[in-house]
Image 1 (spheres, one colour):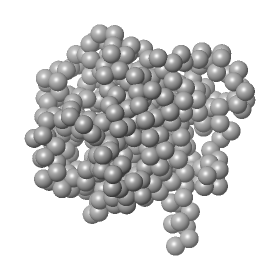
Image 2: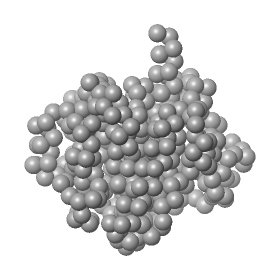
Image 3: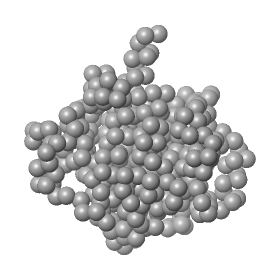
Image 4: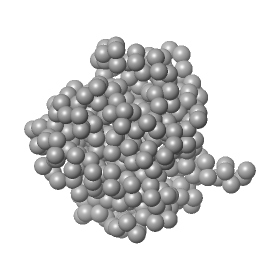
Length: 356
């Protein structure tokens, strides 16, 4: 596994823009140096609210064969890698996102560390409720919540459910993943209250009738991991499924972008969920970072970033990241890019609407 640099080594990097930026902790800057919101009144008027959700699922010290400390570091490390950039100017589109969007960083949800090592139902639900509370605050302020996390339910169900409750109308979903996460129950707890890594999507669709399978765009799964009954149910009910095989052999990225429309047809909002194990070993570093989660025929970093941009441009009520490959600075930069290009898409959408 690559050695992630210390904060001191990171600050000493030649691309570092400055040592003066808002900090949440000594070693945690805000994302891209945006203002730090410490209370609900600070997010009023924001277009986007960044929220950290440090949670690793299950019992013990490892998740999918990787030390949980590495997983939990993502909310810090993504922000660390973001601050090396000069700001929100995306030269590819000649757009400075901060000229068009007010973005604030709401810090990390205060999830007790025990919740990541003692996977009791009570601790999981407590962690989930903390994330939901902040997401609801962001939505009530009229902002798009963007949650950076690592595991379900705290960076999936805890984002998708508040969006459905807020919209009160049909909601579509764009989901990137290696796994469907649609088993009828949570393998880890076998408890009906838990929307875990194996079942969060199935539980979200059951609990929130605002979501319909016909408006689900599922991207990236491949191989032999899934139960055919699970996949065929979603296909039967009209899900737009784009496995990596089909993307490589037929669609290409332009076909994927075109098919995103299904999430928007007849819906009032769209929730986007990026499970970054979708990269497997096709990202800018080896798939072994993901332990047991890596699979061949992965999505490239460009494809994930491009989809983030297009979803932002088409309109999105909320975005979540989880299973961010741990330990590699360049992999955390992929999240920085995906998030920032999503913002660029939002800014482009705002510009296009102003011209109408």
